[in-house]
Amino acid sequence: MTTTLNPSIIGQAEKHHTAILTRALSGTTLNEQRWITLNQALSADGPIDRTAHITRVAHMTQWDPATIADAITALVEGGLLGESTDGQLEPTEAGRVMVTQVRTASSKILTPAYGSVSPEDLAIAARVLTTITTCMSEELARA
Image 1 (cartoon, rainbow, N blue to C red):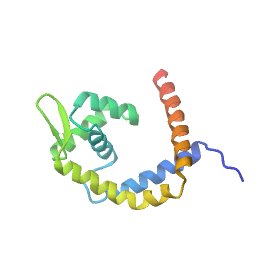
Image 2 (image 1 turned 120 degrees about the vertical axis):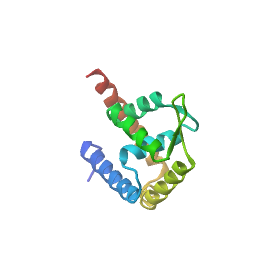
Image 3 (image 1 turned 90 degrees about the vertical axis):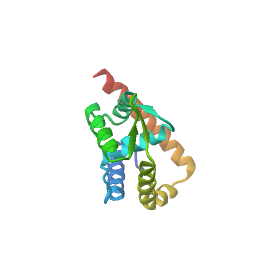
Image 4 (image 1 turned 120 degrees about the horizontal axis):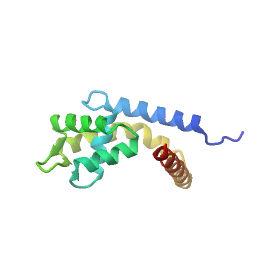
């Protein structure tokens, strides 16, 4: 039986990823919005302008910018993100520890799951999903 990639399969994978993330976030002060906002601030590898960060995360997630602004405020108030007087954001040491904690918890499931697929197939899947996401993003921008 041949399986063709379709929205149902992608949706199921996304729901499972969300369930794993929810489990990893359990017991923290983070929800999905705060996690992605914090994790993306860490991936910036240095200070990032608040407005630019909101724009980047909103584009990436299709969330309302106000949702991301609220997440940033909560992360700053919770001591996981630092914000300078000129609006530059950077994860604090506590934020870095939290990211490591969540990644460690989620990797207990994700590492074996992704490890069950060959690196070549993962590379193909990444190219396919990136192409599909780019096309959908362009269409959403036109709407």
